[in-house]
Image (cartoon, rainbow, N blue to C red):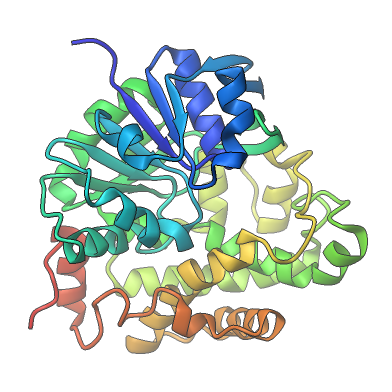
Length: 367
């Protein structure tokens, strides 16, 4: 039957890493990016240079700004864009997705697969497509140039779940041919609320805002940006996330320390030591500005839904709410309105059991 065909959506550092790695593994790969100018160097080279844990040249079958040409023959569509772009990508994919294809959001952040499916339905695509999401991104990676990328570390044991949950194993049977690192998650409740980016990214960025702006990110984001005080804030955000997950009866909720052990094989007794003992974080520099996806993606698409579910079910999310408020002030945006709130997710006025049914079975909101 031949190798599975992959489409990679997004040519940021994550998309380039996945596309190049897949190509080096021998899979046919096509790459889509909305802005053609960004992928001209990739088109001219015919692929992507990769260094770090994986090294070589990943030759691509196609790099294009025409999403239909990229995904029409793909078995698996790897969506590697910031979570705030998931809805827009679903709109662009809707005319072309067909029965039997698998979509994997890398990662979904919180409720990504649910939002993607909602948009497909709204655009009239009711084909038998499996939409799934990864709990976190598989690599610690950074772009090194227009057609090059570095993978600092490949994470271990990344849970994936589909909507409906009974489709997860079917999706993984194929995905694992290329990425054995992906494992089965119980449901998208697990992948959404074990979203560790929600814990790490916004808090470290906001609490290091002056340093980011004064040095243009000239410091190591995790190793230098996480002091003892910052780690204590991270621990509170993590505690609130875990409490919300428990209300939703998430069976396999992980603390941030548990996650670092699973993903990086780091074993420590507190979050500060765990972060500083992780070799995968060494060398990862801070963003050059605060207008970065660590806030523009992770606040509206991760912190907002966590706080929303907490509010509805009586879980105090004081530290999470404080970070959202600070981001609103810094960016002069109401992320609670623009983010994945319950209205946007079609979950307003639902009971706890009805919300769980949407996550697990894809049952639409009752009218």
